[in-house]
Length: 245
Image (cartoon, rainbow, N blue to C red; front, side):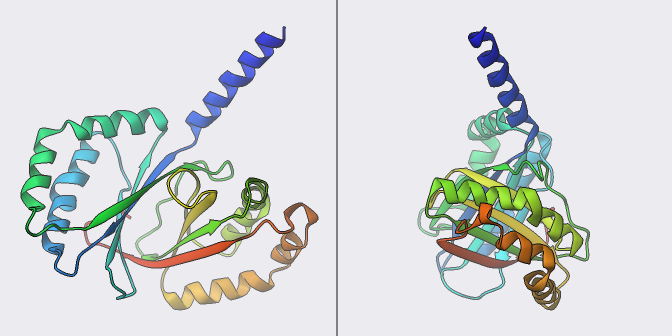
């Protein structure tokens, strides 16, 4: 009987995992001499069309608002589930046309980027699918929270699922995605993206958040004590003209 119950639990877990989207986030670090023209040509004319042909939508390509060096470009790709991620990435790796374009636009003597970091996420239970913002909300904030322990991390994720996500919706934060990192550096950590009309609106919303009674109640709840965070990083992003987000 125990074996049957265990099998049912396992199958239920696999099914639930399949209901949550998988997100791939790549951060490209460019040389000062990198050809942004070639970079954009590769993603606009080849990479995004190749993904679109396989049914992938809402692909985001963003540059940082900051002019800090090295320059960085962020590429966000949502997948329906892990099976789709594995199939599509496998297909892309053997796509001769895409590989030819990569070679032509990224020559050894003038590469279009230095290196990239890639991270993989599973969507939060409380927001299992991303939300595409409307055309007004084109100023993005990408936030990553690192935790000092697995326990603290799990409790912080619970805090989002059990209250913060609803508060973000109430305050019109323009939530795009919330992801639990399952592969990448600096784990355990989570990453999420918000969209606003402007930096001014973003600042106004966060000011409202900090004094909201719901947030006061959540942060004082013993269940979430010391759950956040050993490090918080953020980036302000704007989409490339060809970005689907």
